[in-house]
Length: 326
Image 1 (cartoon, rainbow, N blue to C red):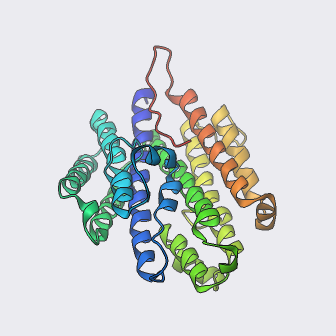
Image 2: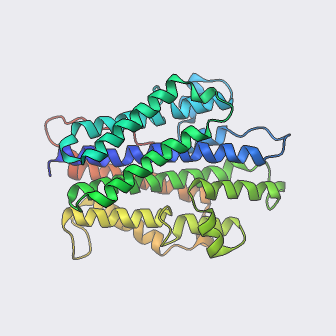
């Protein structure tokens, strides 16, 4: 496969996953607002912090009014990581490699783009309850995943898209968990209170993990939530699961069937997967959850850079796509 084509497929996977995660975060935060005590201020700032774009938001806005946050996260094209920017970039990547995609994949990608345009024209962010729109966007992306899963051959292109999707998902799970631990809780005195329970419940729902978590652990406890979202070997949005699947994709792409590594990207992701595989949640919390997750995000970005240099970069000044959040 040409490196140019592989690059566009990889970023198609990342951008779609990014947009889907943003739609998910916004929807869950609205649901959380319905359950919070009336005297508690709406907590929109953590949602921006979860994306890593807090400084950029502050550049264009004063305060964290829900409408400003929704516009910034969903429709603001000055934000390179907004849903609109991600969907627009996903569609452009799909357009460039249209001959490598199924007809249905292109059509649904195009529909998603016009869905976002319509939402922008209707100023969805100003509506009292815009959840139906974000649910529709999320379902459209999940439909795209389903079409790909049932219609595409498991060739290099498939694995590059999966690689991008799983790296993006690992990054987003780490960010939303990090923000809950450090920002969402109003004070230490409220640890273990019903309000604390609501926040942890919202966190689990934001990654569609609530029901699965309750079947495995029963009661909600911070250490158990951390263990489930970071180290669980079977839940498809845990960081370990995503890194493991991304590593498998890299092995399929490079033809590495004998273990070990064939390139620097495989080496970096193998080291991270191994550390996660043998990690213990008590050690993570003792180390400092924020520091641990921050280190994970740095390593995920480093792996993405290694993938770029091994598979996408060519010597004639090829222009990289650089909207990975730092």
